[in-house]
Length: 189
Image 1 (cartoon, helix red, strand yellow):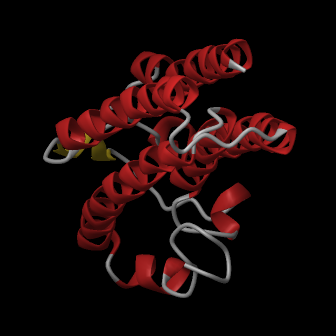
Image 2 (spheres, helix red, strand yellow):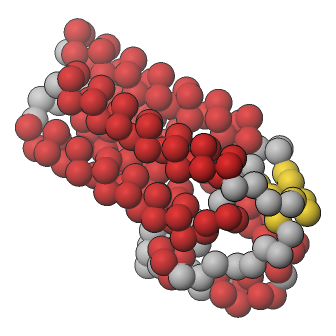
Image 3 (cartoon, helix red, strand yellow):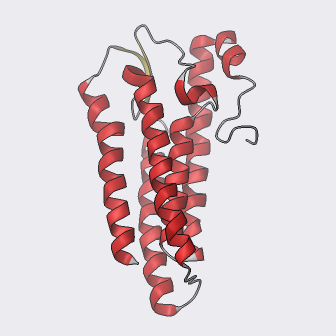
């Protein structure tokens, strides 16, 4: 169980760091407006969620509290993690030069409405949430769902900040193109 969890986690980590941090750092553009307010909060939330994910995995395994032993969880967890990360990478690649870990408006910034942005307003976060949910299933601990909830709450704050910045830049254009689309889950929320 732990081998599969660690292997899945390390693959996810390398892919996410590459697409979400390394590539955007290389293709930086001139920034018109940058907002760091929620970056530290979001990063702290993600680190805490990863810590709790592994903590609860080991806690449940050794104590039996919250442990769920089911091969179905492993068979669901791995593909859910990689499908979620794949959706996230698709969103990042679709945004291209406009994707950065920091909320910012770049020179010549435009709204992207193709790719996964046809379905939801924040597909990179949708993908990340599904990846965390998949890893939570891989732990074999019902308690590790706390990690999923923690990341979900962290993303809510980030999404609110992003939308405020985008509306201040694009105004009615943003609300016309994205107003009816759900934030994270098509047709639901």
